Image 1 (cartoon, one colour):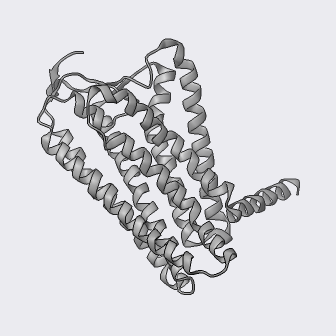
Image 2 (tube, one colour):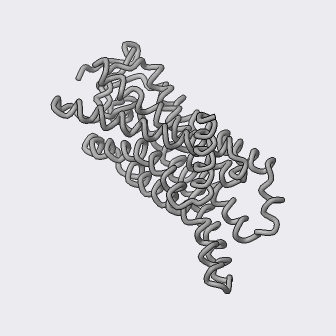
Image 3 (spheres, one colour):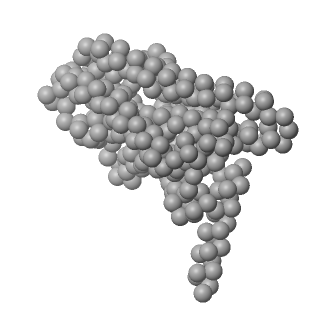
Length: 315
């Protein structure tokens, strides 16, 4: 550890997932496998949504955006980890670190907002099925998606601007596998009270509680509507349309609570790394699985496109 002020900070050193030399090769192949599955699975879903006309509905429009965000999030966090294993270079320029932090924050919050928009889509589908096409038209979907990206952008800019003003660091070693906000806060010797307050407000209220409440309220109305359906088959079908999204909501919010809504300290950073690895790597893998394993529309679209390409190559 070498103390110096910000005028001398030109780079940070990323500590990585583990410093045990015997584990480096297995970790590299594990991370590479996770990344390839993440990219392959999500790009497959994205291509199906773009190419298959049967999937050109609001739900799959948001699912395609979610897949795009997952690929981007995994790339922005794991590319440095993979590069470090190959090159052995753990350094990252100061400006690149801030950019990586900003991009990761944006992708994470966009995902939360998109999931919230998807809960509204499911609410309209279950509670107003006859008006669904009229309410969730193309213009409404584009406006909702645009709002997700704009809110995420303006929510993350103040955090990165504030951290760029830090004038003192106890060390330039980041105990993480990418530039995340919490590990940088622990090595700063500047006054971080304003940033911590803003971070707490944004993460707990703007990025978590408000989206969660909107999602929760949507599901209160959805469950009430499902319970009013008289036939068992009708109730099962209505619940089936929401089960994938509900699974995703529980999974994502659970990991975020464990990762960010905990006291910030050096002792918790190793634990947070494991949770962050799950959040940035495993969750994007699970998203396409959740929406494809039990989803008849996506599986049918995959079979149609697979059959089309097989016939094309044979011809």
